[in-house]
Length: 203
Image (cartoon, rainbow, N blue to C red):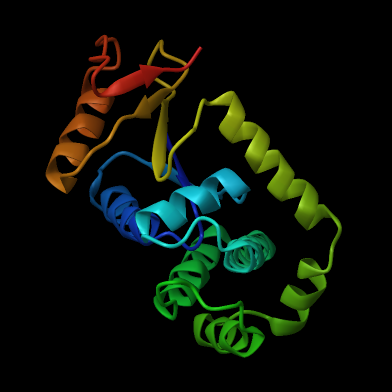
């Protein structure tokens, strides 16, 4: 069993690209894969986004608005997971497809249209989104990121039940084919000691 954790900024362009890459990989691999998106929202993540987008880091109103938009998308995703992880991923990617740079404020009408398009039970979604547990779930995701040493996004952590390593955090991978090749190596050679240039072994 292979578990892939993709840590993302919900409003990050590179993170949207990574989501599609990881989903493609999960579909192409012959081994069963458990795929989990983990949205992270904090001001460090937002500062990274602003730097990547060449936005003024001293524009505090924009910084706060970007934080709120990212947080609302993350809450949507977590609430959507109650109706299935695959549908939640589709919702997130669809909501992201409507975003501009810099990202506009969160729009409930756009979210509603995306929910309908993916096929959600809207009443159940609204009820789940209001749950206090949503905020606890997001806080738990932040804690997981700290535990796994995630500092920059997107980041992928791979856990292979057949490997003696508790988990591997991938470095900066620019090529899909290279990423796929490395994951296949982890599957076929679980005892192989990975290169420190490509992976960080989690303790």
